[in-house]
Length: 329
Image (cartoon, helix red, strand yellow):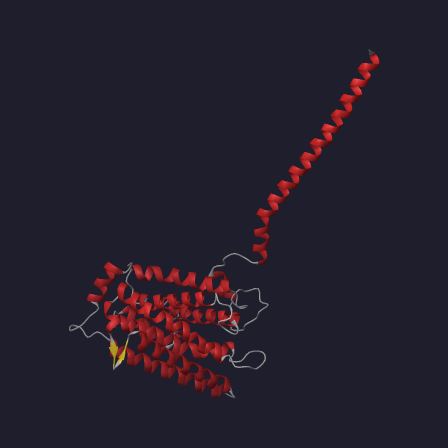
């Protein structure tokens, strides 16, 4: 009887050890599964450390330079696509209150926003541009010129730093002095005819191998052509219905006329950038820079004169009343 009990006790002990081993194994499996689950959750975070999530423009702008550097920690300097996303988000942040208040600056702000959104869609095709990261960097530097001009003007203490062409555009907006077409063209002219030559010269007209970047510059015209019609339609629908049927001395503001105008301005900007780069001395460069400023100013003065209201015969009252109802259409 005693032997039988001892034998049963040994059997129970062996069984308990097997159960303990099974339990440990089960626990190990569970821990492994939990670890795998945690890893699957943490992995995106780890990837995000290497491939960060959205970074706002306010964090990127202070470190933005005109030098394209693929190894830079700054998303914009290295031409990361997320920099384009940051630019678009910043444009929306600035545009929304302008639209809601029917600020006359809203017309160009919307135009620039929609154009940049179309650029973002375009670069989903990695073969569209020869050097997409470089063009992404250009997009950021170009936008920064507009943001800086706008901020300097509306901070007032910095107005002396605003280019003459931009002064005319912002003054016209503040005074409700020109039609919706004028608001559109004054902003576009200042940004392309004045800002773009300096941007192109600063970022460089050739790649490290010495090849011209003109091909990618010209390709921009393709997506500009795609977006022009919808921009005219939307700015007309929301801010001033006369934008779509306006004309300036036989140049209609329809998609064909506007695109041809912009394409011509962009070609001139490239040629002016070449002049800046070719200047042999600081004095020569200053003469070229002054000529660019003067030409952009004359363009702005012409556009302002052609699109100005003439109280009491004409004013912005109809445009403003229309916008008050349709700004969010």
